[in-house]
Image (cartoon, protein in one colour):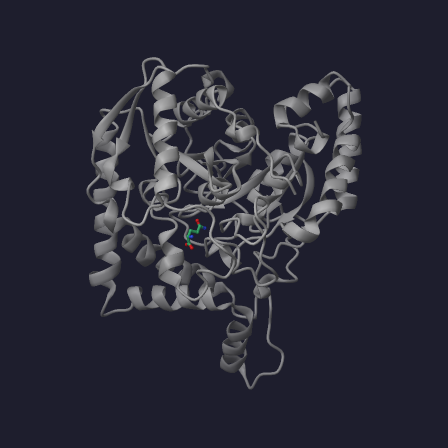
Length: 485
Ligand code: GLN
């Protein structure tokens, strides 16, 4: 097996036994980037020199006897997370030349743990999208079939892990942006509970929904990364001060005593039959592992989740993005006739079409005449969605759904139809609305293209979500397949 294809836990084992150095591991990943990046285009910025410096520093720590599951392991950071001294673009013209003076909390944590950062991953501009085609720079291609999208918005993160351009990545998820691309690229992607991970240094899209999480090659690796990034940070007022359990401790080979529900509303019209078949096979696997399956689960407000999301997320975005005025930082349009014209032109040229659409939707929903009819109503439905999940979790320990209704679609296929694009997140959005943890695990292929299975848990019960994913991966080998690039 190639070094660049290892899991984190395999790499850490080799590093601890001194069978490989971090520098060798890093050079293997850099060589792989050299070989495939021209076709995959997962990165906005590759930080090769910095990676080698960090690898040598990690080797020095290892030589002194220090150990740690992430020490010297090459990873990739989504370009929505601030990295001190390294350009952080959000795949936006607006931030094309933005070099943050500080690190995001999660980046800081990973660096202390020994991160070797390979680069900054491509994404949809400001994390708005489901295909990574909204990047202001270039799309990313799906490593399983280069004419297809990798999903989004964390498409660069997902593609890099699938293609061997990093052993793991960080993504962010507001409505599905970790899980949907994880599903599309056949990697494991975990969106933690809202408040589990500090958002300090994450460039805001919709602050009541955004969470940062791991994108890895298996559930054990997701547990390792989550262990490092989870926990209280006073710099994010919504980060909750609850103890961080030992996530690897939760990983058991079976599912005895667990009750897993299958909510019927998630097997939606328009779902590809091969996707549904793969998920039903996955559920049978979970049953064989000892779980009790409850088929009689209903979450009736599910059909409203997409509408709620496309009121709340744009509303919050329209407020968060008001800071990009060409004055404080970021792009500033030079030739303008006075202040208002400068601000207008900055936004006209600095934002792409999807971002403009969201700002308009959000300002509309928040405007005086429509606030009650749209924003307040959506907040009320949000509460109902949450209550419904809470009721179901009295009966079940976890829920299983498809991650997306379809396999990865063709590049360009949905670019002219925003609503079709929005529909790729029907199965993931309710989880953000309710603030719950959700994980996508590889669950097979349909016509050679990846299918993801979503595991949803109670708020702050990442241990059970990881346990289900890990047990499933002990009984299946979908997560061990790699694309033939
Ligand atoms: N695709 C969804 C959107 O466009 C979700 C994006 C995300 O989770 N960041 O808003």
